[in-house]
Length: 87
Image 1 (cartoon, rainbow, N blue to C red):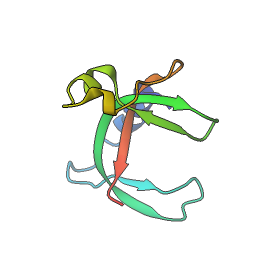
Image 2: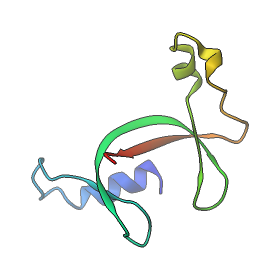
Image 3: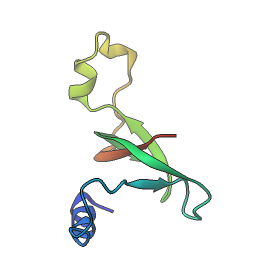
Image 4: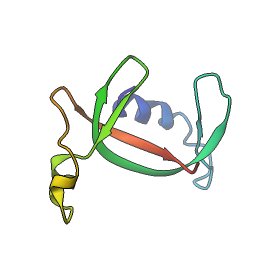
């Protein structure tokens, strides 16, 4: 899903109050759920159609006290928005 697709889908729910919580599913089968805790931009490298790795953007790395502590995003990584669950 792209950010544009997410925005389109969320636009369908403008009738819901602003204090409606957002909950993430642990997996596609709905085995567990957790409220959304945070959102952050970063880099994503897909390892398969359903899994991949998170990397800092170069700007995020350079803002760290020791940027070399964190690896650069590999070639093929793309900008992404990450949704972080509470648990």
